[in-house]
Length: 116
Image (cartoon, rainbow, N blue to C red; front, side, top):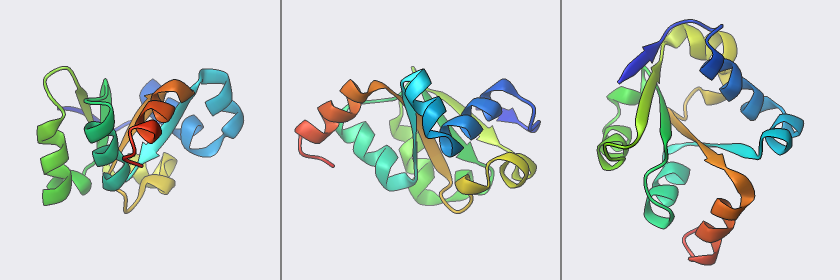
């Protein structure tokens, strides 16, 4: 698991943009799914995502640790320090885990499978 402790990290900036700007989400064709339930639903409906992001406190929660274990070897897992969450990703507080979903087609595939 890679750990990020700098709020200036490009991944942190991307997460911040996806969490706070609908314009950026449309421009990039991506969205941020945050929370254990949404990540779990994605794992069931679509499969392992390319990237999972977990907060330092979230990585210690049993429910989130189980999700990380189900992600598979092809998923990059990044842990964000408490400082990064507090400084750049306050929306992420309390959720503990998130992933980037690429494109509306993937979201529709999950919905059509009846798992959302």
